[in-house]
Length: 115
Image (cartoon, rainbow, N blue to C red):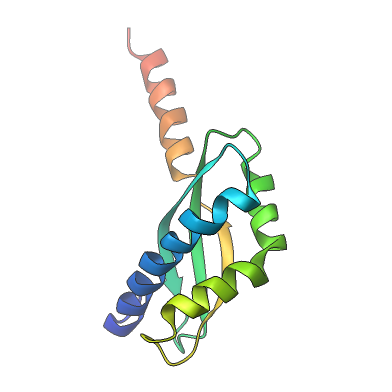
């Protein structure tokens, strides 16, 4: 469970990194819509796990790998946006959030069960 400061910094990271994705994302991945679903901060606020949902692509893991290869570019753009709000720019890790895919799969299973 995160404390109040971790939640505040997580929301700050989410807000500013989503703007970075809007500007830089089209150069990294093609024909995909990537959105941030959640940010989990470490207790010392040095590490941020950014959970991403990927739409319009079947190979969602490849989008995450493309973002990992451009992590330094993304972190640089992110750091320039957030440096006025936070003392130290956290290291970022990307995690694929497949919660919506799982929800759709379960809804389809329930639809098949009901007559």
